[in-house]
Length: 449
Image (cartoon, rainbow, N blue to C red; front, side):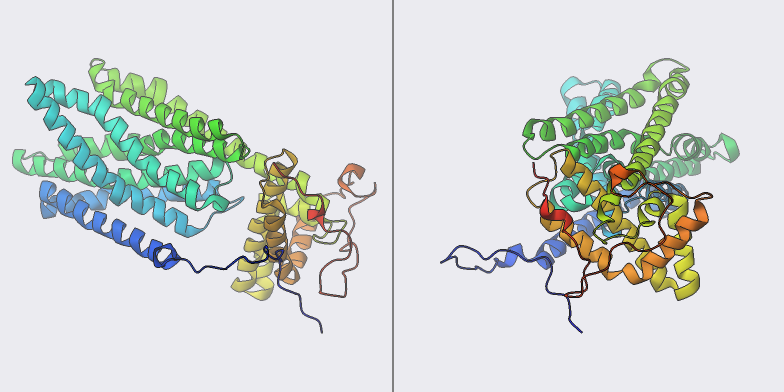
């Protein structure tokens, strides 16, 4: 039985071209090792700084209270990313950067700037206000934005749109808020220990209510505007250099402005905090939530509209675009695979769904002239990943399409189907040569910017 050839293939290089091995610092393990070392050292330093300021007992209390909103926020961002889930390593890096590196930068820079302003102006109260409303937003949002920038530059294939920007930025800010909450709650507990505060009248209870109950979304809300800027930049064509630079900067400036407005709410009078919270923060949070959900639904519509082009050539089964464009059908397909073949099969179906979504997104960008020079290579990589998992995924997705669609679907001719009820067969016969489908290869008509 013939086996499939290496896929994709690349044309030979020019005559006389010498293949040079990368230098030692260019190896992936070196970069990963340096990054892990940087984050670990930052974590140790920030741990020592926070513990010195709060004391051991205050640190433990702050840690126990600050961790409460973290699982909910991470779960919310992960839910948002379910259509085209990014790798866990990106989320782990983002959270670690926010909790360690960004928090360390913020503590050191904010303390230095505030002390310098107080020494220069001889006005400690004014220095604290200026530090909270000007210095802190600039420093903290810049430090958090660095994680989004690193993922955007070095994990470009995982960063394809607004949802990816929101998820990476929100996860980074969640890590930052986690460390900051430990500091604030631990300090409040130490104040109560000295003053004898107890119960709901204690400083710890008030800090917990404001930071954990009322506004756990504050830092993620600010930084997601930076993520949106990077996400829109990711949708731009490679030749649009000005947009790809200016859009993230605009998002960062908006994040800084919102952060400064929030921090300055206490200077707006007795009820300034509640006015800003109810009149600005909650509506902004609602608007951002709507935008994120709308973007997720748009991704599903893109799947339903782009993937049918791969059915006539046999790369996808006729029922798959419909099932892949519905979260309910996707879940049903995974459940079907898990019930009949176990967890590995369900994991394969989930991977199939993710690769199919990436393929639809790639084709959509290609039709808009934003596919990039590696469009064909990337398309073939994604199709090959789908092909490896077809035996497990196709029966599950076909079942899911039947189970979640109450009536036969009539396919539109413009999507490559004849008018009529939804077909039940897998479409064209597959080519016998290498186990791949017969017919023209979709990438033969490349979409390049």
